[in-house]
Length: 505
Image: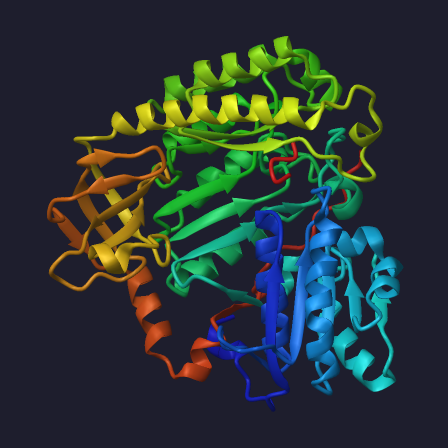
């Protein structure tokens, strides 16, 4: 189903804004919320607007102060809503799933509260709240329909998220996601590939396969090698230049996935593998179901099969009971793995998780000191790893909005195959986001690379054409973004129900 098929003429109901907190899954859910609102007749509010007619908060619940952030934002909107008859506020996402009626009690000016399983009800709930003049709270306990069947307003014309599953079967003691998004539910491979082919037809050249535990894909449909098969199938889609995925769990990272990555040309040499802790004792307390040796063994196999791969990770510092010896084990793994990048977090209690009730909570000052040591070590390693890129010739996919100083420096920015960010000298000829530029790397910083000489080649792409079509459209059409609904024509019959790491959190 094309964008034009979804863009039927409707009366404009007003403007909307979606504010997103949390992980990549929430970002993709927000694209769906925007698509639903535009299907219902709303248009995106200008960035400089004081307030939209409908403001939606897509919330996250994995941080200790998540509710404080939400209620602070809601408090700021209260006087604007009071002064603007007809304005509506909706709260969705993980915090809405967790807190339910509490939100309306604390912020009675909220019109709609909806959960992670019933995103598709947002327009109906807004209309019901308007007609009945009272708050609508609807939290589904299980998934009503796979969210990728919903219309989506994609933020990018050239890159897109594609969900392969929702939910998670792990029981990490620091994570509340399984309670809020439920058990893993996989999409049928035919539906995933049909969505990717539709995206490619619309000009997308890069997709990221998305799941709370993406490489566990197949457990719900009874095929342990389903994820590696999916990667190989992506390699057969003409026009799809780059495939990425996030986030895998070390427990489910099998040799067939490594082989598929190495042998499928459009699967990029990049791997984000959450570590969380380098201490096997702490990993056991986290219920992470792997140990230090297993994690480093995966890294060794990936490096042997894909020598140019860039690895990144997530690390939590100060988990309850973590000793100085445990922390030293984390530093050891960081030195051994030599991550190109690490997302580091100071442990904070997630209400409702087992870890929040554990004894031996680490004092804040101890956590802070360890965190600073970890960041300093990783910064040093990131810089050393980036310096190895100097002198290499890389193909970059030109990105939009990733170089904050690009206008001042007369540069553009792009992503290398391994996802490193590269700022490069603006070529003489026009270059669009989604196009591909070949450059020589001349300088490395810890978090980016520079290509200061002239571009060696510029390749105009269908993805660049798609970006150009979007930006050339009238302003009201630009606001609609790229609409996508999952095609169903020719889809296979549903599979029988199956019997029987959270990298995003």
